[in-house]
Image (cartoon, rainbow, N blue to C red; front, side):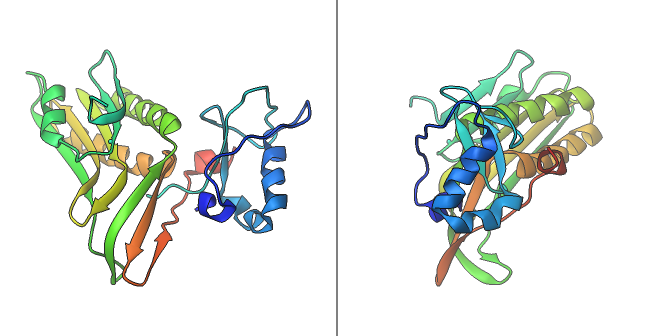
Length: 230
């Protein structure tokens, strides 16, 4: 949404010494005055970490304007993290193979597998949908997915967890996101999977564009309170 409004997805900018994140936003708001209308819902990031507007900048910093998130060569994954505990986090532009992911998570002591899949439906509030397109701030997204997954694993009696999101164009019925949890017992697995998808949809910078027969629109979601109140 922000990219469409400003007319580009990235840019280079030189600022005076002592500049802060807010100065970057002000620069682009002057060039595209309507951007300020969205200021209340845009979160700023510096070097792939959420940061307040007063954050001082250094040479070479990477800055991102993030509108509310829409609540994947050789490998099929464009980005992936597989940590020592066996948890798995990935972005892909290929169909998500949930059976293969489940197989890499399962251990002998597991008695439950919960696999949540978000799929593309054929309408939004009755308006027929043709297909979806997902875009993502990939470097930051994969770090946040791993952070979320590890925090959930540390607070629930589960074995392993995987969060995978697909990017690019998706047709009706295709899986856009999967949260897979293995555990000795079913209740912690269900609880962890639900928390995983809920936090992913409010914290990870992934955006959804819906295409209809009579137009297209970026889907507006909402940031988690922990981000907005920074």
